Image 1 (spheres, rainbow, N blue to C red):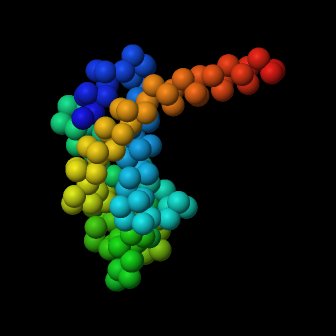
Image 2 (spheres, helix red, strand yellow):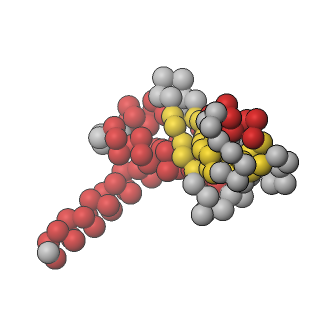
Image 3 (cartoon, rainbow, N blue to C red):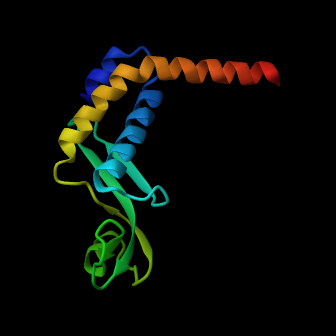
Length: 130
C-alpha cells in the first residue's frame, strides 16, 4: 500500500512519507485510545511496508496501564542506563497493526492530492499577506 501511494502521486516523496507517518500515529492513537499528550512516532519500511510504532512510556516495576508504562526489563533493552520513573521511547506496535496501517495508507492515498493542494494554497495565501 505504501509503494502504491508513492508511485501514484506526483508529489515529493518527503511530503507523502510525512503524511503516511502522521496517519500511522493517528491510527495508533485511535486503536489503543492513547492520549494526545503522549509522544508517539511511526517509522515505515518502504520496502517491506512494515510500520513500527514507538511510544514514550514511563519505566515501572509493575505495569498498571500498558499504554503508558513499560517494564524496566524491556526499557533496559532500549536504554541500558534507564531507571524507574524515566520516560523512554519504546517499540509498541500492536499485533494487528498491519491491517490498520494498510487501510490508513489507502485513505492517505485517496486524500493526498486535495490535502497537499490545500496546504499549498494556504501557504501561498500567507506569503501574499506578508
